[in-house]
Amino acid sequence: MENKLICSRSLGWILCISTLVLFICSSVRHELFKSNAFDLGIFDQAIYLISQGKEPITTIQGFHILGDHAAWIHYILALPYKIYPSVYWLFIVQSLALALGALPTWYLAIQAGLKESQAMGVAIAYLLYPVVFNANLFDFHPEVIAVPLLLASVLAARQKKIVWFSISIILVLGCKAVLSLTVAAMGVWLILCEKRRSYGFLAVVLGVFWFIIATKLIIPAFSGAEAAAVGRYSYLGNSVFGIAKNLIIQPELTIGKIFSLDNLIYLIFLLLPFIWSLSFASFKELTPAIPCVALNLIADYQPQKDLVHQYSLPALPFLILAVIYSLALGKGWLQTRRAIIVWSLITFLCLAKFTHFASLYLEFLDNWQATRQAMALVKSQGSVYTTSQIAPHLSHRDLIKFTDVGSPNQDLNIFDYVLLNVRHPGWASNKEFATNLVNQLTNKSEFKLEYKDNDVYLFTNKKLRD
Picture 1: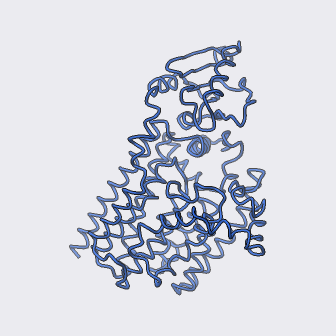
Picture 2 (picture 1 turned 45 degrees about the vertical axis):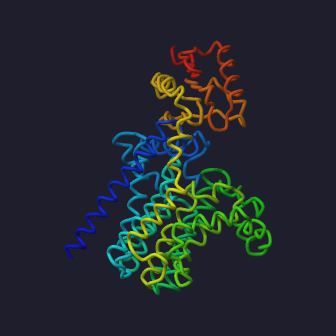
Picture 3 (picture 1 turned 90 degrees about the horizontal axis):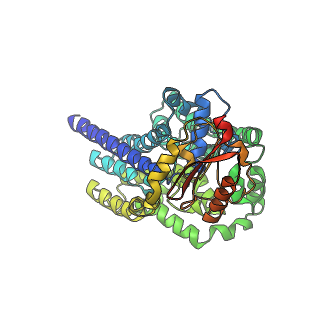
């Protein structure tokens, strides 16, 4: 018992350190102007508006936040914003959620009969899985909250704790509509493989029910369109259920998408950190991961086929379960904690994007100070037109938009502030577009050039000064 307590204490320290490292990394990236309007600005503005009692219509997208992914978890995330509105709450939640996934991982490993040293090795392997670090860097996404909850729901089902199981999967469903497919698949797995029929039936019913409600009612009602991700499967149809129908009656449409070099590389990278433990016997543990991986494989969208973005996160809990299952059977190339950690560290060093802090993330340093000084002059809650990278720093307001060459006819008079970085015009913009905006604003009597330094320009609307 004493050794177990020592082990648990060690895990606690590891969780604290991991949370701190993840939080610092995401915060530094944000401070270096590498976060974007899509997606951090969207979520931060919506959550801020909720905390202020306003309708969360994100002006970056142009519709209610529930029309994005039917993620009602934003209303819970708004609670700390009521204390003090800050985007760093999202970084705290994200880093804490991703790190906390190691806790149910450890308990599931102990429950499966693994040695405490092996359980610790698996928990650390979870933390070193490249998607955990990489997704933490890629702005903020509410589905990170689902990772520890999915692991916790499996633990609750195995411990026959129906209340905790129900709470866990309901919260998972609130993170993103597409997670309902993972929940439903987990229900099938619980029925067929775990013999937890009542738990499985509940998961299937809730998953299917929420998928229908979210995709057919909530998202169209709040956005006026189909789910945003539908465009990534346009070769299959122009609606969620149209795509589902064609997947069944015209499976040949997906063959060319599935059997591609990109997908092969994706699967190799997805499995490589845990390849040492996977066995044929453990494949059944991957059943709930099928919807997530399948959607990534058939998507006509490259970011869903890498370990840089968040799209593979729903598969991670079940990869961990497969690892635990193999180790419990005595299978796998690596059995000791040291060997597991060494392999996990090697794959982390190869696939995690920590090197960006010495290269990609430093490209805005040449006029970083000027950008900060210009931002400090945006003192009111007035409307702002700015670059994609600056937008998440100024998203606590009713109206904010980012410069986009695809929308060149923006009415500038609706904005109180226009903040541009010509040297670094940001995602969806370019230097020519930014320069034209500066020239246009300079010639508009309604605007005054408030600040200019190192290719950073801040214009204020005269109505703000009247």
